[in-house]
Image (cartoon, rainbow, N blue to C red; front, side, top):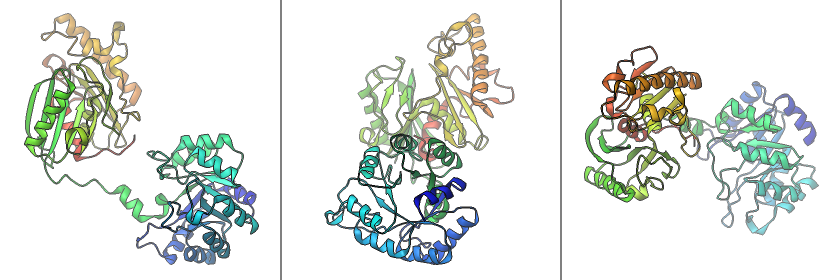
Length: 476
């Protein structure tokens, strides 16, 4: 079979089943993998990606569909382990595969062999080579060495390529633009929309393994997070107060300490550390005004409501225990979404405190940007052209708002609810914060789809604890 005829098959059925097992898995058996391959073929798959001589021979004996073959083998002098040397190329030729897949990065290969030699050996035996790459540079290197097609197999799995949540669609987009050879998408594809996106970008086929045929990976991906072994800490930093709560593993608030927000960021960090050390908590969640990068814990953008805030880092390095930190609106939204009455629903949170915060959870995921960006409802113009924060935030209202201030704030509140409904289509909007739960505004939280936070004034701190006790799925 030629590469052209294989591409023709993929035009009819572009899903390629990678039938492999995690090393040591009970499913790592030629008989089991053959049955899994046949199950995928039964559902319309017409091309397989297989690893290992025995597995390939077993599947080849049971079916005649094209096989992209590889051999994983570790050598002490190289990090390359997908078909790393000529030995594996020859073994695959003897197996009768249709295409040979190999690591095509520029990393040093075992015995100082090189990619160009391996590709030449495959070509001498009439077999095309699929280059498994991790970056645009690897793609260019593979093409220069004579590779017949490319796959994003190694994207996010080498020291040279950053890991992404889900498939690296941007890398795929770049590779499709620089070459006319067939390009395949592979690596962390687990949902149908991802497969469709890859095909629309220009992939000839999408190779899916773990989500189809690896019970170890599938079980691991669905396994709920384990409960904390001990008490956890929760920090809520707003424009007026900073609070530290101690929570049991069952999410019960045991104790709260609070104090006015300190002026200097290091003083705030020192106060939090002192609370952690005296309480003996095993981990801490942080809910803070501003925008927090969930990958690093760095607060990289904030308004002047909290002094000297930009540049603060909430991490194990700065606080001494494992730490998860997010914007306060996002953290509060996650806390609400973890409650039994809201779990599984599309839940928006409107946090009206010193400032105005907002968060949204759908399909069990916090909807936010890759660096922790949150819905900027606070900066949108409300009735009369002022921002919602200017009309609803406690910093803009006097401690005892006048009748006209209340009327303006109420008008803004009702408009904010409309904006949330029209932007996110939530099943529920939950309101929290000192302004949101004030006596004069709380009266209006009775309509269907709108409710006061069951956490009362503690939504931020409960949300911070939920980040640790019920870790949100990583979407950043």
